[in-house]
Amino acid sequence: MAVKKLQSIRGIHDGLPAEVRLWQRVETAARKVFGTYAFSEVRLPVLEPTELFVRSIGEATDIVSKEMYAFSDQGGDNICLRPEGTAGAVRAYLQGGLTRSGSQRWFYIGPMFRRERPQKGRLRQFQQIGVEMFGANGPLEDAEILAMAHSFLSELGIAGLTLEINSLGCADCRPGYREVLLDYLHARKEHLCETCVDRMEKNPMRVLDCKEVSCQTQLNDAPEMIDHLCEACDTHFSGLKSGLNALAVPYHINARIVRGLDYYNRTAFEIVTDQLGSQGTVLAGGRYDGLVSELGGPATSAIGFAAGLERLGMLLAASDTALVDVAVVALGESVLGYSMQQGAALRAEGFTVVHCGGGSAKRQFKVADREGARFVVVIGDEEMQQNRITLKEMATGEQKQLDVDQLVGALQK
Image (cartoon, rainbow, N blue to C red; front, side, top):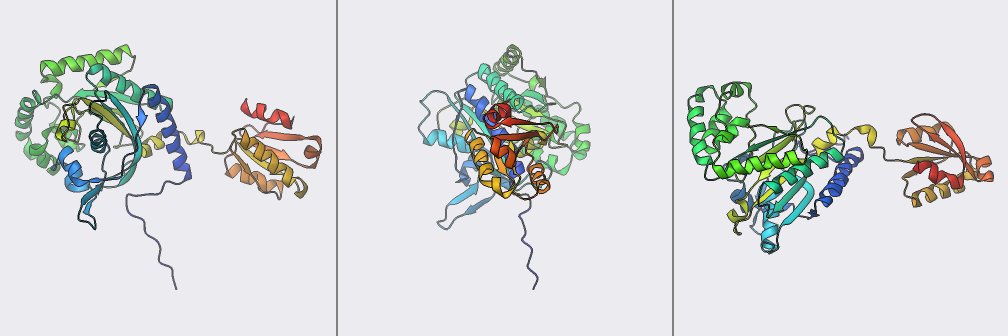
């Protein structure tokens, strides 16, 4: 009888060891860099009240209306798998009673869920690093947040990235711009795609972000928000640029950057690459000064960003992800116990070690190669009697004999 093949859920995949090692590199860099900016890690739940995202993101957004995994549990509560992290962070900030505790600088790491069309770099369950700062009062804080994002990606050694910035205005200047933009879009409505025609009335700024060639052709001369900013927003944007210049963070102004969520205002930014096709954004965020009050708290200025671990993992060089420092090759049954002791001693010094299990030298070296070991320690009867080892560097083939007490120093070099 044939065994039925197990099916996976489309757009949801396992994080197997090779990919998880890449994620861990990203997480380590995040904790290192964010810590230097006095950001602390928080752990937020995966399940949240559905109403939280309806109120914060907006009922008319694609996330809430089409993509969110929402359901009623056995007790009749309306809950969902979190589609993004900012709203949950605001909820935690309010429920934790932290509104009078000064600036709060947080980051979090974990899965998010959206029922999107799966494609390269876009999944229905995806791992994300998010950053939020509550009490970010002005452009200085914006510049430092963007500098932190830049330092984070620099720590990972990812090349070919570009920081793009824009201003989305505020409640004072955005309504006037909205009318100007709507007039422009209505005059070209018959040439826009169906999605943009639908978006036009709900959130016309989202039309500027459409990737359809036909729409982009119509948008070449579209009015831009940065030309319609009120004095306060214009001053804020100028302060952001001055701060980035002072910190020597390179940037480009991209007046077409918009955010898909309703709560963003003023500063918006993306860090993009040309290495991932249409899904070229690897980190994005912005300011959301009205969200805390929208969810029942006091007026609180805030800014944040998020980055997907899967996309960052795609950009990391696989050659830098070796898991094993040393593979131990034992030549003969008589040295197995001794070789295991040498492996244990190396682990005690912090090295990652695999023992190749004995048997033929050819088989053991194949194991070492398959494990991606940087070095091989070879131990036979003669080495054991003389308390020596043979050390081979796999990348170059260079090998040398060392006293056992010289091994740790040689590996550290």
